[in-house]
Structure formats: structure tokens, C-alpha cells
Image 1 (cartoon, rainbow, N blue to C red):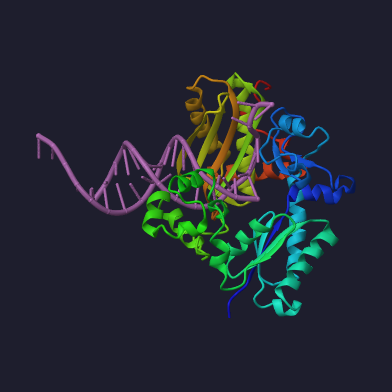
Image 2 (spheres, chains in turn yellow, cyan, green; image 1 turned 90 degrees about the horizontal axis):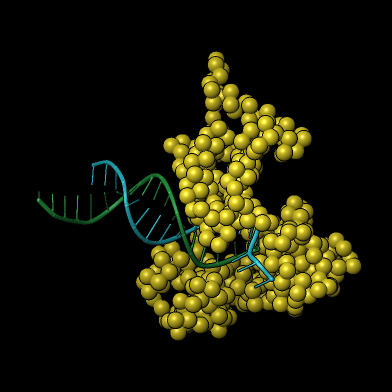
Length: 390
DNA sequence: TCTGGGGTCCTAGGACCC
DNA sequence: TCTGGGGTCCTAGGACCC
């Protein structure tokens, strides 16, 4: 028996959550922005009413106001969206025991075994859409197909507030006329390359051999495109639950000139990363410092440790040496960021008889984190994060 | 109208080793 | 006296997604 996969993708998720919460915002152009009162805030999600004015993700707030003066601007509340997302997933489990959460606003349901409980695929899909809309005030788009990739591409065609099912055996008919951009991972650059080759639709990709695709797009991605353009899923055996990177970055409202003003902020970003690292019971073997200068040139500097660690006092000297490299380009600074990568779970047994220097530091950090859990993150900082105040 | 913040995955070049 | 090829690690950068 052929399996059937249902893909749910929430429409304009963050904006829809705000509209569901505030009834007077429904039907009005609404935009969720990164920072409302900063000259450098941008759109993180826009309602379909706002999109009608040409507003799209990543657009600066100034341009948003110009395109639509009466737009409703709302500051993003990520924790709220995570919470609503979890409620949505719980409701989805009523339609199949096999729910795979793909992102904050996307899930896949294997409905092969549960569709008979609802009479038909169409009835199941309509019931699911109605439930999310009537009970949570959230619009979504649903796609059903025999593979994950085709269900995802069906959703892309049916947005917004739509439903599209691709019957088993009709996959190639569905895929053939779609533009190459419909394939996940094909962005502006890859599209341009395809167009130079005279390839505009998925059907035309079939003319290219696996070898040609691998030569053009690299081994890994070439293979993905080859498979996906034919509607086949690609086993993602590399996927684990292990987070790959923990990062924090900040764009200043105005470019900064002096490193003595910047460094304390960099240390605070690092503290936020290492705090999350320890909350997740992980260690990092690599630290990256990112700078975007006033001319938008972006550089990264990184350092790898011989062994993974979670100690702030290991990260700080490494971070400072990376900052020194960034200083060599004498330019105003627009953004700084800190990333921890090469993450692994902490496995550390403590000796019963004595506490090593590491173990003592470990205990200091744990007590700092306890204070932070109780009084807030900013309750405790390293001296270097405090700048001039000592 | 100047261009956010959180991620994922991949590639290329150089160092170094055998 | 000059030179092979494969493998791994490190670093920097880039495409793409939500």
C-alpha cells in the first residue's frame, strides 16, 4: 500500500497569531517586526493583507510605512509563537499518531493508516483546516501526496488558505510545469544558473543527467535536485536531534566607532550563548566571531579548541583574540555576533575525592546560571561585559 | 528604503601527515 | 632534485530557509 503524507504549513504564522489574539487586527494589514522603534527593524512576518501592498519579509520598517501608512506594526514575541506552535502540534495529533515537526510553522503527518477514520483524504484535510481556523483562528495550507517532498511542493502551489492533493501516480504531471524555484533550496542563485542553461521548469530538469547536476551544483545538492525533481524523497540519515550551532547577534541602531564600546556587548552575547549551551547540557569545540562593518562587508573569525568545553573562561581569551583580528579592518561596526559550534552533549563524571579546577569552575558557572534562572539573565555578568563600570 | 536574527548544510583552499 | 596522491583538520565564506 502506498503511503500518504499530509503537509501543513501555517499561513503568515507570526502575523496570524497576532491577528488571532487581537480581533480588531483581523482583515487589516499587519506586520510583525524585529524591533519596532529601531531605524533598523525589518519585517519578520506579514499578513496577506499587508502583502497586497507589496510588503514582504526582510523589508525595512521605513519602507513598510511608505508602502502602507496605516499598517499595524507589532513587535515579535518568539516565545509566544513557540507556545502557539506547540498547541497546534497537539491538535494535529488528533489526525495521525505520526506527526513530524519540521519547523515552528510546518509539520508532516503520515495519514496512511488514519485516513479511513475520516472517510477520505479530502474530508480529513478540510476537517483539519476548519479545526485550526475555527478553534484557534489560524489559517493554514494543506498538501497531500505520496512523498514528503511532493506534499511540500503541493502546499507551495496552494498558498494561502488552500488545499491540494496530488494523487498517487500523478506526481510527474504535477511537477513538470512548475518553475525550478518550487524546489526547496533552489533560491535566486540556483535559479539563475538554471535559466542560463535554458531550464525554467522542473520538467526541463529531467533532461539533465545526475552527473551534470552534480557538476553544476556540487555532489550533495546535485543529487537532491535530481531526486526531488522526480518527486522522490532523499533519506536524511545525517539528521539528528543534536543542535549544530548556538548563536546570538545584534545590529546596532547606529554604527559604532570604538571597540571599547563594542567589546562589552560582545562578551554579553557570548554569555548568552554559553548560558544556553549549559542549559542544553552541551559543550562546544569552536567559537566564531562575526562582524558586519558599516559598508555591509561581513567577516567571520573562528577558533577551534582541542577539546569541547562550556567554560566562559576558555571562551573569553579565544574570543578576544578573534576580536583583535576584526579590529584590523579599520571601519565602523554595524553588527557583531558570537556563535558556538561543533556541539556535543556533556558527558563528564566528577571525581568523588577531589574537585579539579575544571570542576570548581563548573560549580561556579552552575551557581551563576541558578541566579540567572531566578533573577534574570542580566543579574550576573563577567567583568569584561561591564565595560567601564568597575 | 538601505539591508534582522535564528538556524542548516556545503565547498574550497591550505596545512599537515603518510 | 623535485615531486605523486590520498586523507583529515582547520578556516572562511556562501546559499538558502523561516
